[in-house]
Image (cartoon, rainbow, N blue to C red; front, side):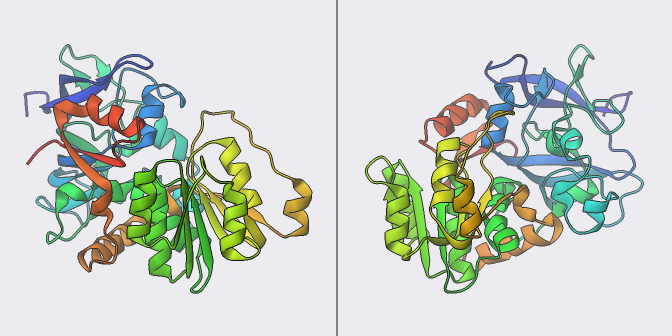
Length: 374
């Protein structure tokens, strides 16, 4: 730390819409109140990082993104109660902890969710990061900004995990993997013996496939256009795989399930795929929507089909997960060999961040993880 209580770090900065990430020297202040300073070991890269880079969501720039961090606690603020220096943690989404949704176990629908995760500053309107010239950098992305060698988060979104687990692998549990698995287990509550269809077999969709297998679904269908993803889906528990470039996914789902699927998850963010997912539901079927298009995008469905068959459509954020409970559960399932999400990932060095982003957008890599500190 320098005389102003700042630490020198390296951070990946986005300066303008659509520009590449640039690794730069920066400074981060010491933790205050209930904050913890985390030395980042590795960070997952998620679709949301790219859509913010491209300004689908209006996060102010220049900014340090990254929201699937995993690392080691280096320092704690004076109000931190449970975490200690040396703890291994996964960083998850930000929430206030005191509004009605937070108090009722629905922190992912926090009244302050957008501001705390996409606002570009802390709740006090200030940044914790500065560039080399001392100018503020927009940060607090998902209450962490973990595309950096160090990150600040609050105690309530820094989740202690077992030191037996490989820390460099765990970051994606904080968002993408948690979203897919949580949608199945927490939101849809997929029942044993039921049918489930994942529209989109990226990291989120395949996490849902693995969770549907754990939940005991007897028919698990993966729909995508990339043959390698569909092959992996079969390896991870899908009973059927549909290439929607080659066959009508709605007709195929109905063929495999009889009258349509009991549960579905749409993770592509494409309105036309959302329509297919609704159409593929059976009577009283429930569709979860996690795919994030640009703000303002609309989708359509047949109202009478929804009405007559009692179908439901619901939005899902972060898999309805209480991260402090759910992330350790996923870690335990992984250690037991029942949730092999390591098959989704590819590691990249920090200075290859733009290659990782490109490989993700081209569908070459399902879940990039940036190795930042060892």
